[in-house]
Length: 143
Image (cartoon, rainbow, N blue to C red; front, side, top):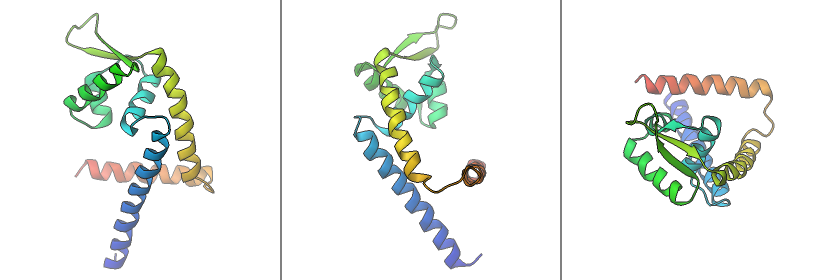
């Protein structure tokens, strides 16, 4: 692989990451949500009652970061935290009704992101891209 090709790859990946963050952030701003909080709301919508440590693992962040995020979300009325009935050491997180309503708005905004990014892509194109991205993430996670 030539140096020019490598530089083009690095540049494209950096440009894509920045453009994705900007588009996502702008659409989340419309509903007064941070991208990470929106992701968490969607994860809880799919699997309510997730523990704080599971959330940290899913988001790839430290436990203190999740604690701070959840505190802000709890103050906003989006989630509640409760001790696990069987294991008092665990704290489980649940969406409130307001959090469930917010998920619908988030889903609409993510649909706009998806439509913008995948315009002109076939299902096969998306499948190939998904496979390649999983492979790239796997490569990065194994060092």
